[in-house]
Image 1 (cartoon, helix red, strand yellow):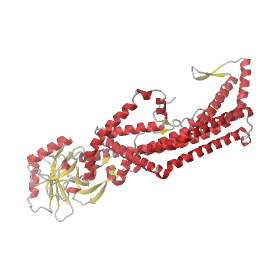
Image 2 (cartoon, rainbow, N blue to C red; image 1 turned 135 degrees about the vertical axis):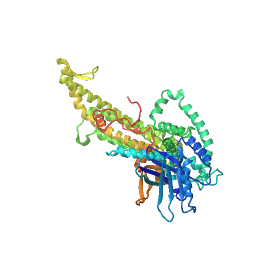
Image 3 (cartoon, rainbow, N blue to C red; image 1 turned 45 degrees about the vertical axis):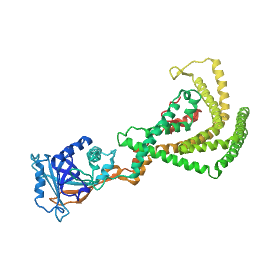
Image 4 (cartoon, rainbow, N blue to C red; image 1 turned 30 degrees about the vertical axis):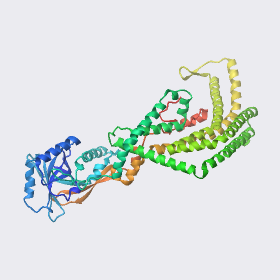
Amino acid sequence: MVLKVFFPSCCATAESGLLIGRWIPEQNSAVVLAVVHFPFIPGQVKQYLSEVQRVTQINMCVLGSWSNSKQEKEEVLDKFLEDLSTIFSHEPWIQLSKERDSKFWSCCIFQKYPSSPKEDEFILVYYDQRKVMLSQLHPTDNLTTSADHKGNDASKLGAVFDTVAKSKVLFMTDRYDDGPFKLTHWQSEGVEASIIVELMKQASVPVCMLLTFLLSLVSSVCKSRVLKFWPLSFIWSKLSTCEQLGHRLEHLQIISSNRKAQNQTQLMRKANICVSLLIDMALGILLMSWLYRENRIGQLADTLIPVADHIAKELQDLLQWLMGVPAGLKMNRALDQVLGRFFLYHIHLWISYIHLMSPFIEMILWYVGLSACLGLTVALSILSDIIALLTFHIYCFYVYGARLYCLKIYGLSSLWRLFRGKKWNVLRQRVDSCSYDLDQLFIGTLLFTILLFLLPTTALYYLVFTLLRLLVVVVQGLIHLLVDLIDSLPLYSVILRLCRSYRLAASVKFRVLEQKAGKPLRLLMQINPLSYGSVVQTYRLTTYACYPKDSWSSLCKKLFVGELIYPWKHKGEKQD
């Protein structure tokens, strides 16, 4: 029988006493948590262990005895520690001792009813108690043939990690406490604490109460019936700024909630949200300070009007080029002139609108700059909405061209089915056979010829304005991806992986310290941290993120037939 003993490295120099911890019979292993020193009263030790077991819900017991030969001079101590097995009836009784003037340890086991006549083998595993208690062992997905075996080993190690993590109450006593006996563990020299952390905990209570009250007011306003009526509901659903503010409002509600985190995952989620909010607001404040320094708002407002005029002039030149002989192509002159003048009139209206708003642009930008104090993501969302408003005329051009092109494409496809004696069955959503008379075929031929010869002119306008529209959508998509990156990146977990990698454990490795025939094998357990990619994947925050609705093949099909390409929709949003 192989007996595994997990021994804390901080207890290697402890004085002689009792080993207390947890016995795991399924794994035939013992997890030592602390050493109780002399003098002690056995009844008090049993009462203390029962109280700890009631709090931690762990089967805590006296596993055996520990003898430090370098500090003890009496030879009868080993016999006395062996006799303690009659008082603390635990099977098996483990007796560890350091050999005098030697780096090897001796390990013995006593059983009243031995289960196997063979000699027991011992594996002594040292572990850093502080790191194991503060770390969380993450399950790994193994795709190899030995995945089941590795997963079983991970569950066994998880029992060791879980035992140490749930024994925090045992580690809250040090040698300065006035107790019936003294313990040696990783905090026996003094309980680890931070004055800054304790002050922040005390200050967070009134702050969270105030934040909860303010958030309840904001939530009641957002849920009022006024915002559910048109056009407020339409504006709220279309503007990226409103979606981002709603998303950050949910984050603030999670942080200010007085509900305690049920597990480590929820605690890490709260910490990631808190750090993400703080960094987002810090970046927003830096952006705001940069904008208001050296009158950059005024410079931006003075630049905006000339840029808008330049874009409008370029669009006018593009339309004049399309109304001529673009790239040597011969267009239908009548349709070309009608479409060109129609779009030129829209550009004229747009220029008039921009110049009408020019006196108020600086004031608008000044108030928009103040919104950066809410976070960089809010400022980027406002920028996306401003781009959408400034390019509204391009969107209109695209819609007009796409609708006209789509009408001709579907008209040509219907007339092509007419020539083949087919028709589209709307009820059954399929193509059925149909017989047409001579008049229908004649009219269909005329309409097919007209639409076919007008298609190149319409397709050229549609192609140009679709490229412009796709350019705007790509710019907005990059902004949305940046917002999504800031919202979803688990910054606290990444910082924790960088500074204290043992807190995020992926697995463990064992290093052989000493190996000698007739002596227990001594191993050192070390923690393998999660990779940065696994940290991001495991603790990535959920967002309202925008993703393409369709695949690339579906997108190309829509572009070919002239269906409208909308901006990236919010995940989970119902679309028509």
